[in-house]
Image (cartoon, rainbow, N blue to C red):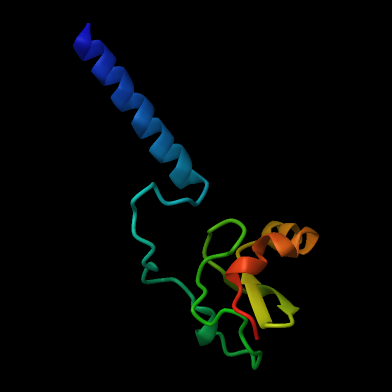
Length: 103
């Protein structure tokens, strides 16, 4: 009985970890180091001042940013992983303001 309960707990924990990773979220305790293929805002050569130069993850989804998806704010250009993330940001920018450094 104990083995069965232990196996069930293990399956549930692994299921939550996999489900979190599928949504682009690192499991708890995982480092936030950028993958090798990550694009940093500071390396995007589009002539724009960057709101967050060391940004490589979308503020909304946590996915890797894409140079072609952005919005310009007072602090500079802010990049996103998808149009959906950009739209969600634009609907409620105050929600994310605390992580954007002031200009």
